Image 1 (tube, rainbow, N blue to C red):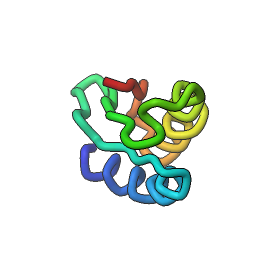
Image 2 (image 1 turned 45 degrees about the horizontal axis):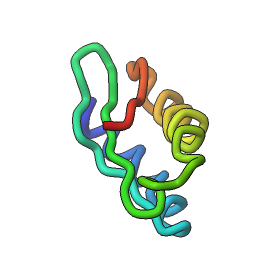
Image 3 (image 1 turned 135 degrees about the vertical axis):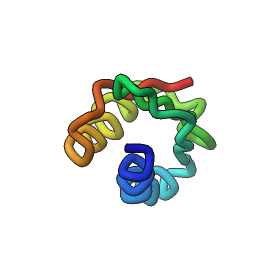
Length: 73
């Protein structure tokens, strides 16, 4: 599942990088929780939770249905 998550993040990453941010995959747990680290402008942005939940999480769940949640660490 980690490889599928990496591939999905690769599709999201250019949009984040266009705004000066990035996302790093930290871990994918056996129960489907994806742990990511928001970097650059995304790490300090007040809208980062919205980006995480309504952008990254929504896309990853669509691409990899086994995902239950995406959290920032």
